[in-house]
Length: 181
Figure 1 (cartoon, one colour):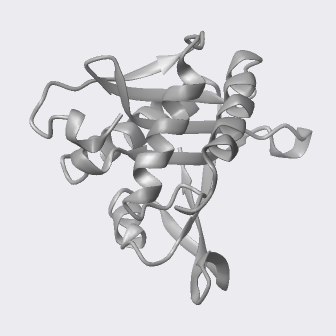
Figure 2: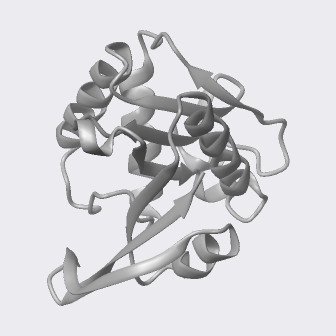
């Protein structure tokens, strides 16, 4: 799916919680991650990563969703995945009251229209529904994401300078945020 196939003013549905993964979900996830990555987004991949690597990560996530180790919340447009949030509850007994926002991504064509906030709000609702009290996330510098998360109640707790290598000579800080549910 090319960005040109997504209508910036088109009707978007969601957020929706995905309890049973659709057979095409692996491809849809890899496709969205690819579009976000090529546009410079911070979803954990670089533009030079092979599609097979994105598909493998997507397949692993879909399996985690299937066995209830992760919760997926999506937004869509004309049967195309255009945004997602992934919440992963902690598994250790002393951390069962906490969870991690593993991914938050919105198609580049739709960014700046409030969909990221809607996905964040849906994550908080889901976290509360499953009994989580605290959330954390890790992102990278260079995209003004710090201001986005801080504006929505997240608190920066630490930085690891240069921990993310986007490309040779392009190192970014890894930033850790937390918030109460």
